[in-house]
Image (tube, rainbow, N blue to C red):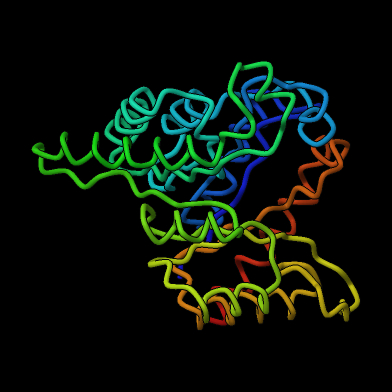
Length: 272
C-alpha cells in the first residue's frame, strides 16, 4: 500500500518557496503521492475553509513536477463541473505526459454554492453535470489511446449513494475523504467500487482518542498505524494523509505537519 500527502496549496503563508518545500519533504520522506485541492473563485463560503492565495491545481502540479522526480501528483479533488471536460481531459493528459506518467485525477461534484453561482454553473445540476463530464473524460481518453500509453487514473471523491455509483461506473478507485475506518468498511461491504484510495486526516495526539466516531488518522501514532493497517486489509491501494484541519493559521506553521509526516513515514516503514 502506498502513502500520499494532501499538500495545502492555499492560505496565508503559502508561496512558491513553501510549496517547493512541501514537495521536496514529501518526496524525501518516501511518500508516493502529493495531492492538492481545487477552487476557482474564492467566494466567502470557500474562504472560510480555504482562504487566498489559492494556487490553481494544474498549474501548481505542473510546476511541482519540475522540482520532483518520482512522487506522483494529483488532485483531491478537482471540482469537475467547473470546467469543460474536454479541456480537463487535455490538461490532465498533458500533465501526465510531461511528468512521466505521474498524474492522478481525483474528481468530485463540489459543495460551494456561491462559487458555482460566480462561475455560472447551476448548483442543483452539479451531479448530472459530473456524470456527463466523467463519461466525456472516459471517451476522450479512449479515443486518444492509440499512442499506447495508459490513461490517467481517475479517482472519484465523495461517499453519497450517487458518488458510490460514479465510482463503480467511471472510477479506477473510490476516494472518500475523512471518514472513520468503520464507515469505510461498511460502505465497502455493501458496494462494489473497484479500487480504493481514501484520504484520511493526520492529527497526532499524545493520548488515545476514544470517540467511536474518530476519523481515521486522528489519534496516537499507534492508532494511526492501526488505521493504516486496517485500510490495507480493506484493499486500499493508496492512502492520502491530510494534515490540514480547517484552521488557516496552521498553514503558517508547516513544521508541525512535517514532523507528523516524518513520524508516520518512519514508523510505517519499520512496521511494514
